[in-house]
Length: 341
Image (cartoon, rainbow, N blue to C red):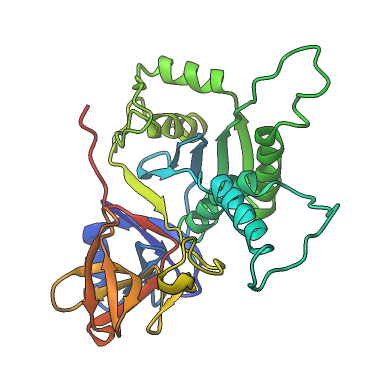
């Protein structure tokens, strides 16, 4: 990363600095390198405040991938491409089926709640938009964001129908909840239509590729960059096309037992969020071999370590005393990748 987030000794976000300047401040004892949710930042030891420029967060929501760009008039600090949370609908369906099956077996289960008022957002919709809100809150803790510029996506509706309209669309209900939560955070909220984004992108001569699952800048981050640049200005072409990929980690917290029985028809308990004193997903530094990685499960007094880039298991026999805890993660953040365009 070329620019490193900076916070004051009281935790107030300040303007990011160049990586070389960050190393210089650390050598002089004027700053301390720390981690927050997988992103390294610099905390100053002598300054409690400072002058900040206008920094904007551009947000491009999507069904499979979504993009976030933090930009000022002079620099593009970070481009993030995040995987959308899409597993909740199937998980809720599976949980319902397993709960119904337990009512016919001699196993602990709660009674059926008839005519229960659910209220609020449905679980899958809420998980999707809560994920976007979590990312925005995380970035606000590291950058002095003054405005959110969000592409206002719309659900397809048919005229003349009373049943399926905007008030019943999960997308419309979810995004209005998201906008309300963003307004509570403090920065200004600016909404742009998809047509506005298209015109701004075409006006700058930028192209968007059709491979929606690609990790290239031109897949999604080009739109979030255009949204941010349209508000703060300063560039006619992106000067930073490096993309960092954000993948949410999924843990089984409240699963009563495994879906299939083991030997003797016994179903073992399954799930949990702690492994030998570490919270699962914790970013650790393995001092012997694996370096930076995150904690997975445990087996026979040893830890499983996973790669930050691919999520694949690196080992399953790491000793807890060989791992230095850095921070807790709820996602994995890959190193910045340059565009191949």
